[in-house]
Image 1: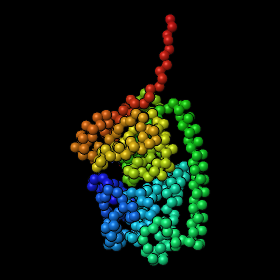
Image 2: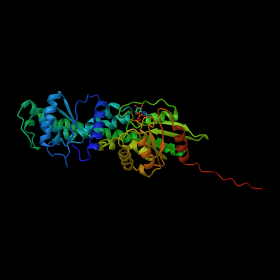
Image 3: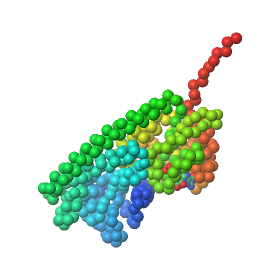
Image 4: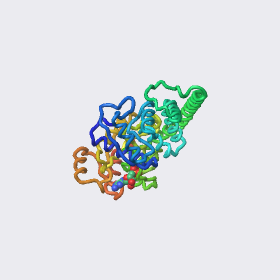
Length: 367
Ligand code: GDP
């Protein structure tokens, strides 16, 4: 389902397919429906549900992935109608974050986000299962729970309680880790080493640029979300001043709020920087939209007041016409190719020129 233009919908669906592949799925078919709003009961309209069911049968798909966040009842209804597992964009993204989180804090944050997503949906899943086994195929009625009375309900309650406990425990743990992070930050500001954050849409080439700029061996993956935990590297200016460069969490369209919440502390580090190097993929069909999406998230964590250096990457493969258009649109942007290295020296200079100058000590020379 989409409310945007056909192009928006197709870009978003292409990205969803890339996300699904990143998560290890094989994508078979796409289906777009244009409506003013999602159907409250089944997300896509009634007619489309039939189409979807037919598509599932003809392709032999075992999962339907929807490009949005579905309510617990929409998820349940769609599963009932299509007879296969239904996953929404949020669950898919959470799954990928879970696969890629490496640091202790990252892992705890993803687990917290997953449990918060799961809690209100627990009943839905139980119900779908019990109905499938009962084979009643009864539709509607969000209240339900008929098939869950007795031992089932008790189990559900225990599960919920266990999840709530785990959630509060994770929150406490994350809070503790935050304190450590804040202490580190305070140390940094005492040292007064300028910090540069590399932000940008996922797959824009942030890790590749970080490698180019610092010669560090950061993992570069042609997959969404290669970067989850921030990597920080030291760099020096041509006149010998030290600064740090950090690669930040990848951004995607409609980042689930659970994830924005979960990674708030990581993103807050961006807000603590002295400069944001915002990398844009010059080969993307809609770079402006990517820029908008990233700026939206930056604003959410208060990083929109920082100086921003816009960098258009992948000029080696981007087409000339697009590059000209982007040059007119963003006259101050730096155009580079992390692959060929073209423009990287200029970028380094542009970064240096925007770093805060150390306070100059003035000595009076007395005769
Ligand atoms: P990140 O998610 O923003 O950190 O992006 P990566 O640095 O991991 O790069 C994502 C993909 O884009 C990888 O396949 C890179 O090889 C590719 N890439 C990065 N920079 C360039 C570039 O300048 N030109 C081209 N053609 N591809 C690039």
